[in-house]
Length: 322
Image (cartoon, rainbow, N blue to C red; front, side, top):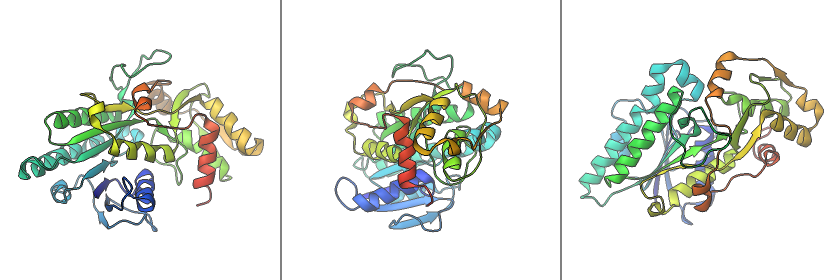
């Protein structure tokens, strides 16, 4: 079994590679090819590590020529950066997906149709846009109000169409906000959801740029890796023509996040959260879904945490002080 991970140097990519190295894939060892523009000093063990960007001219052809059985497409720039740098967002988040699909299609056709890889694409709940009902379900319209969301939904549709034509066998997983992300803050507009937990637990001040009444959906990095592996093993006949799935998560307000942190770590830790409104972040967050159901994914066996306390403890167990 050969597996290609695009965006393998990032947090989720590294956790995914480490899980496969530890547990194998479908119960057997797997050859993992990791591609990204940079890797951490002590990366997860893989068969091959390739450094480069998904925007490099012609990069997808040699990667597709490896004929991986599974491609995890995690490579993208984050929401806040895609909103601020319009051109970069489209060049990184959308066009490489087209190039990848075309390269895989060429390998499919060169094989006489026998090669049809599974591709798992990390999409986002940013594909949805306001106005929202209090809770929406799997039937809700995809109408993003950010460039990042537009880029993700276009990739979803391309994967649907290439799958419909039989070139690939694709699944798009719409991730809730992944929290708590270890390491340094990034440029994601959603980064404060992790920051108000991660920084205080590390004894550092954290900035809260939105009101604590903001409600959102969350899942841990551990759950995100589980989503990806489940999508890679799924019988896509169960999806029909709709190959994008809302992933489950914990719905809570920022205030509920903070109270969970207080319950787990105490008042002194919570005191490190400082409120500092940011109009740009507030505007972006206003266009995001607050609560939704994920009945299709749950019925297929996708699982996430059931409360935010569990998400805080997962960060403490797996990533604090590493």
